[in-house]
Length: 364
Ligand SMILES: NC(=O)c1ccc[n+]([C@@H]2O[C@H](COP(=O)([O-])OP(=O)(O)OC[C@H]3O[C@@H](n4cnc5c(N)ncnc54)[C@H](O)[C@@H]3O)[C@@H](O)[C@H]2O)c1
Ligand SMILES: [Zn+2]
Image (cartoon, rainbow, N blue to C red):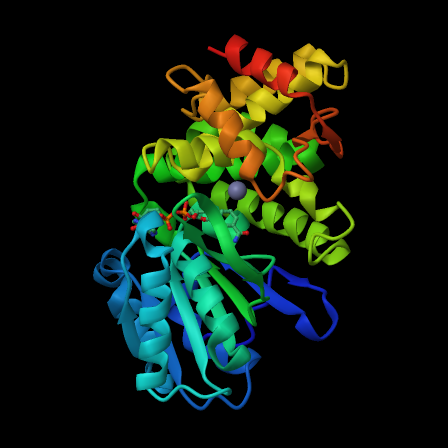
């Protein structure tokens, strides 16, 4: 049982390399995969939320029984990513006597993954972290690449670290219990990967949008695996976002993050990124880098997935103020990732505020 399941891919980062597993049913194989991949485990802790524990606690407790994990519950959603929760987690790690050979397993959405990854990166200067993402966004995007963070009152993800997990295990079967809204949100990041890297992935999403929204596990496993491979290749080329290659994954995020911050939880990550990609696409089209037909295709897919692409009801002045404070801003200049085609590498470019304001205004 559970013997030699093959990873979907391995991310190659020298001594920080790790395997990524994407397949239905893996929650029941957690214990064996972890023990096969990670040696000398002294103790193990699972950090999860009440929602996930209720839905899947039995499964992961069973499959991890050999490791006798402690369970810590944290709040769910964006509220998880606070200083308070971070500090509480560190207290609990200490209280449970975790040492440098302990393993902490994050089972939950991207928010729990980001929080636990950060806690794991600073506790005793870093202990091993296993990511078990339970949302599409987590599996296709946030669990890979080692960006961890908590939020600051005034800016999302302001305090964090680059810290690679030791292992990522994504059970696509558990996506079936995701609320519709979370399905859409996660699919936005997969569309992003298609636009910036793969026409094949983009076409696959377009062809199967109804099945994806219906959580067809077969198709979901395919597009998530493809997404993971795309993200892994960007990370391998620029692990710490130094050369500008990894930054291309921020397509849609300049405006997206501002919308997410400004909405104060009303608009979630993927929903904001959908609008952000549209505005970036419009800017790119305005300066003749992106064809109108490609922009229309992108908008059509996002809308077919039930994602909004318009900025109505959003205060433009406020957004600009938030963008100026963003990590992606360099010496006051607003930089955008601009698409150059569907499935084609985008470019990073400084964009005049007046053009951003114009496009935000046009995008109703
Ligand atoms: N680190 C990175 O590289 C990176 C990349 C992209 C996004 N992110 C971060 O990810 C976060 C968003 O993550 P998310 O979209 O996964 O949201 P989330 O973690 O808030 O989860 C969304 C909701 O889904 C519920 N849920 C999770 N799994 C479920 C399941 N299997 N069945 C039923 N309900 C389930 C949760 O209870 C929660 O209410 C943001 O904070 C964003 O900044 C990080
Ligand atoms: Zn994102």
